[in-house]
Image (cartoon, rainbow, N blue to C red; front, side, top):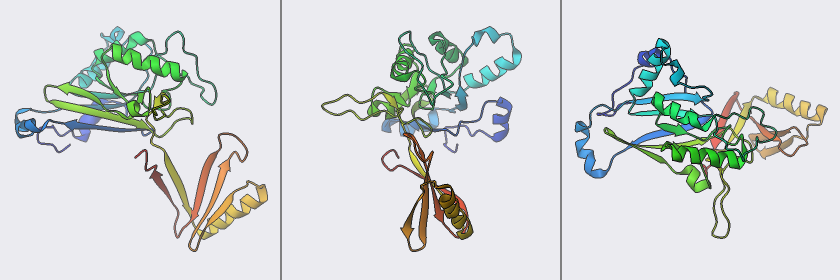
Amino acid sequence: LRIPWLKQLDGSRFRRKMLPTIALSVFVAPFLVLPLHAQEQRKDLGEFNLTLVGDNNIVTLATARENNPRFMAAVNEIRTGDAAFNNLETSFPGPDAYPAGPPRGDNLYSDPGLLKELQWMGFNLFGTANNHSSDYGIQGLLDTIQVLKQGHAIYAGTGVDLGHARAPGYLFTPHGRVAIVTCASTFEPDEPAGQARPDIRGRPGISPLRHQTRYLVTAAEFEALRKINDDLKLLGVQGGSGSSQTLTFVFPPSGAYGTSVTFELSDKPGVVTTPDPKDL
C-alpha cells in the first residue's frame, strides 16, 4: 500500500504469515483517516501495519494453544498489526435467541466469552456483515452486537437499522485513525437491515450490497437456451430489442424465493456484474 507512512507489504511476507485468504463473499473497505491538522505531520507517525485475514469462526480457547509454536507464530504476526481485521463469520446468541429456519443449515455460533480470545490474539477490527450474521435471527444478531459493544470491539456491517449497519467503526491507534465499513453480497432475503422512518423503527440486519449478474452468450448458445426453455416449459421470459436480446429464467420456476438468471445475446461469452446503485 503506497502511503508514505504505511509500510508496503510484499507477497512473500503474506505467504509467510500463513493467514487465510480474504473472503470474497464479503466486501471489505478498510481505509485510513487523519484529521486535517495532522496531515502535515504524517511523516512523524511512523510505519502503519495493516493485517487482514478472512473468515473467523472461533469455537475453542485460543489461549489453550499458547505452547504451540506454530500457532503462536501466527498470533504474533496478527499482533504486529496496528489494525488487524477479521470477518466474524459467527454469532454470539443469548439464551432467548433461536436458530433461524430454512434455507439456513449451519447456524454458526460461538460462546460470547470467546470474543476476548480473538482480542487476545490481536484482532481489533471485526466485520459483521456476512451470510451467517442472522443464523440466530434478529435476536441473535442484536445479542452479537451487544457482546461486541460490551467487549469494546470495533465492528461494522450490522445494526439496529440500515443506517447503523452501514455506519463505520473507528479504531484509534498511535499511528493513525482507521475507519472500517463492511457489507455482504451473499445473504438470504430477510437479512438486510431496513431503513428507519419517522413513524416506524428500521429492521435490524446486515449492510447489503445487492447486485445483478448477466451472462453473455453467443447466438448459438442463446438459441439453445431458447429451445431448452420451450422443451422443458421453464417459463423463461424473452425481452430486449435490436441487438440486445435477453432471456430470463427463475429457478425454481414456481416458488416464493426463486433465483433470477438472465442470459444476454453477445458476440462472445462473459459475465457482467452490476451493483445496486442504492447500495453502492
